[in-house]
Amino acid sequence: MRSFKTVYMRGGTSKGCMFLKENLPKDCDQWDSIFLQVMGAPDPKQMDGMGGTVSSNNKIVIVWKSEEPNVDVEYLVGQVIVGKNQIDYKSNCGNMTAAVGAFAVEEGLVDIAEPITTVGLLNRNTNKLINVTVPCEDGKIATEGNCQIAGVDGTAPELKVNFLNPVGAKTNQLFPTGRRVDILNIENIGEIEATILDVSNPMVLVKAEAVGLTGTELPEEINNHEHATELLEAIRGTAACLMGFAKDLEDATKNSPAIPKVGIFTDSISYTDISNQSVDAHDMDICVRVISVFKCHQACPLTSASAISVATSLENTLLYRPVEKEGTIRIGHPSGIMTLYPNIKKEANELIIPSVAVQRTARRIMDGFVYIKNA
Image (tube, rainbow, N blue to C red; front, side):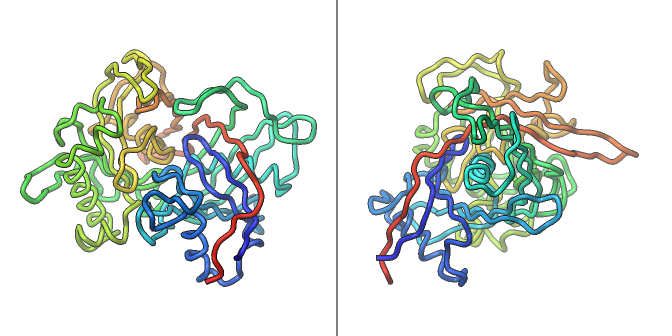
């Protein structure tokens, strides 16, 4: 058996294995076979590994101290595709970004400042900069706090994840097609309106009713809705082709399953979340459901929420909504409400988005060694 030092962490509403780059083989070509075994792929039950059978619980994060100016730590996220011998490195995971900040403090990769340590990150999936603020006390990371995020029980110290200059993470453009609304021609369906944008990660968004849904469905209901899931994958694949990530729908499904993400939205509306708690329409600005690697996310991927918050703030997108509090977007999702803080400015008739921030929590669940087969 081979063993590798790892830390199993929750970041926001995702979980995964954190590896220091120095503890992995220098030959990166070995990494995929190691990570697939770590997560128990390709078995969809992942019985013989650490994977959690859904995309949000199948994250691999490689972290190393940076030599770049004004950057503390660099990291690369691998999305293990459930049921396949495949890892996608094309997109960042915003939730696990919160875990990277906490991990960096705990592993001594940054100097601790109290009460807040700001960790400067460079994500190598997107080459984008992110700051994560980590509460610290008595020379170590704080363990008690009153921050509660939808989708996670209890409270914890607040980590603020601040995506810096998040526009064009993969395409170098806010609206990769040059339009705020695109008309997608879907085979056997017809034309469907969509807003396609690239903020923190590429995203395509359509009205829930356009795919035969209300937007209040819970993940399992969406996953079992064959027509809607097939249509959403066709929409995602069509957008992937428009953005240059795939040559056709088959290529998009096979080789670009993680980007772009696809989501549905509707107006603020009351619903019951996955914990059987009531979510009130008055507490949100927009209601969304996001498909992540072919399955509806139990909450909302953080990078998707970043894109959604910007789309909701900009006139002439499908999602534009006047909001109660300028600079704040409240997103209703299957686990409750998420609050985003998009910083949007206009300078010399040019749209500038210096940052998008969100509050998260993270914690170390387990550390030690993970064991895999020699071959």
